[in-house]
Length: 324
Image (cartoon, rainbow, N blue to C red; front, side, top):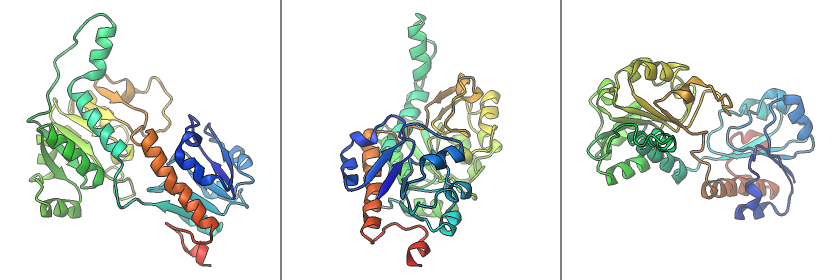
């Protein structure tokens, strides 16, 4: 098959062991990002299979209508960036391994790194010593403090394990179902939503973004947090209403934030007020961006291409395309 891979910005994928799985195919790898639909369609004119690098490129009806040769889109995890109905209308099969058997170790590790970095003022202390001014303030230890995890999923449970190893108290909040599962597992669930935000020294968000969860974290939730507390978000920016986190930080509650996800991505404005806020440690959506994680994820993606080529597709999201 003629396979095109989008948005491999650092030309990483062809250096990984999993790339060998595509040896029977004609592969084109694009190392930049093309926003213009017409230009992108021109690039992909010959593509029979399209590999997506997470959510970097939206797949719309407009784009699909310009790709008559496309038969398969292969990716991994959730797909809010893909118009599935448009795929079906254009007879394009979407395959996506939802990896129910594991969690993103890379995302869990980054979450924990941001918690520690906020606690110890890591970026500011590094900037201070580079400027020749030695220490700039007094940080926090995490032992004995309370980590609030919003969302009872696999990544959150991994972060909870790290926190407990460091001597933290862990409490939970989330959907009715999530809280019920946490209680059934013997976990500590906060007495109320307000108490969860008010008593946590760190709040970390671990919820998938979908229409029902957009704007899930409100301005009043953030206002309830301690001035000494930190908000960590390695999930999706859309879980918080646009502008609410910056407003909360400017008001002083919470006092700090560790952020890996943004309302606009890629974020290339060096003067973005959230990134430049002195209480924010920002990373450019690198939660899943490690060599180990990418090799694992794209190995699954290539397996889907080979399964399709062998007339036995797997992980079908719109199986009617294949069944018809």
